[in-house]
Length: 270
Image (cartoon, rainbow, N blue to C red; front, side):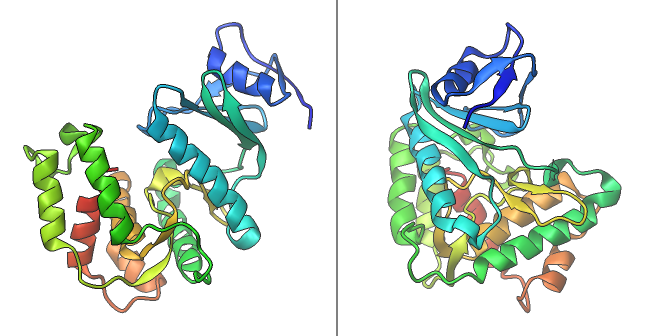
């Protein structure tokens, strides 16, 4: 595929490099950097394209981006994700070029549209969780995630300053020990997004929700998604009772608050 795109001279050179390697030239279309998210990846919209680049100095980010690409290809038409136009290595790291999605991150929708956007997001999660999971190659069960969490702690990659308020002042090893002590003894396994915070869902009125940032996707307890969704909804749209919406629109009789607390804790390591 070849497109004639442009960017101003001060556009990020790493974004231009990804476009060039992908066979996409840059011209007068503005490169708009997308700032939400804290991963350290570069993400930009260039006309009808979204360019994502995981930096070479962050191998963990590259691994997540490569898995995200694998997940998007594996899901195919089973879930709504952006179409991949190109993916591969570049001098500055690893890149992905996908089609831009019409809509707004659910975290950023207008207040008068937030309720509808949250209901649509709940519907997208329910549909994802209902998909057949027997052939899923992406293991995010606790048996897989605890070793990942330990590796994060040992590598010094856990941001202790970003812990939820109830863990303010904790160390990463202390949080990990508490997670192990409070881990559930059983898991209700489904296909999960893995990072179901609202910036990772794109919504437009009357349209299906699109799933983004699927590097943590995999087979896990449904509360991996529900806990993070609730936390994000309460942060971004505090005027809406997200728990009431979840009880009404998700096939679950009641919310397991203990499971929510555990999976919020587990999320601290990623």
